[in-house]
Amino acid sequence: MNIDTVVDKDYLGKCFRDLADAPLSALRGVSVKDAKALQQAFGISTVRELANLNFVKWASAITTLADEEQMAPGEVAKEVLLDDAVEMTFPASDPISVDSGITRIEVPPEKVDAQTDHQHAGKVEESTESGKEAATAH
Image (cartoon, rainbow, N blue to C red; front, side, top):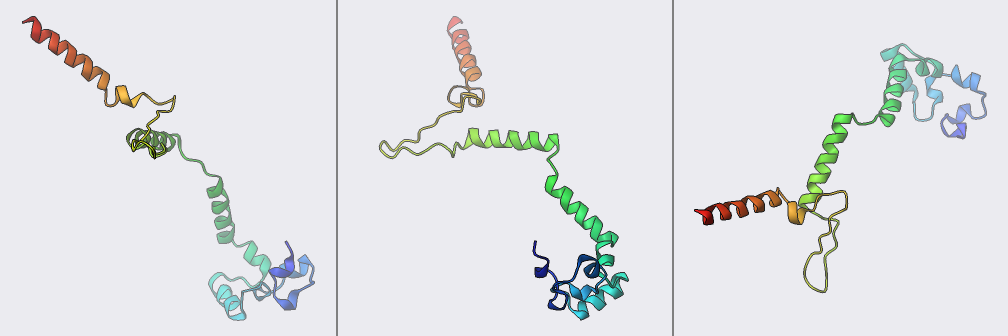
């Protein structure tokens, strides 16, 4: 990073030691008025004091960790179950057939065959057949 892009024009070419001990207004975008407000609010007056301010360190740590945070196992399971349920209900990834006017539905190998087992269709059919047999036996 070119340090000249983050410091005020009066501080171009200064070494890092000088910049660290420079007033807050040395930072590009921090006016003298802003520097006074920071001094009143936090009791700081140099770039080094700003960098060492606990609030800045905490905010930096939180945002760094937030970028690396992973979902809890329970959240991952819920997300996977929701994705699977949506895929079974609305196979939006299946292309629409343009020549026959019918939507082609293919079930991924890791999914159940929704055509034959949607909402336990197999068990319903089995129960219906056994019910028919019981009715004809009487």
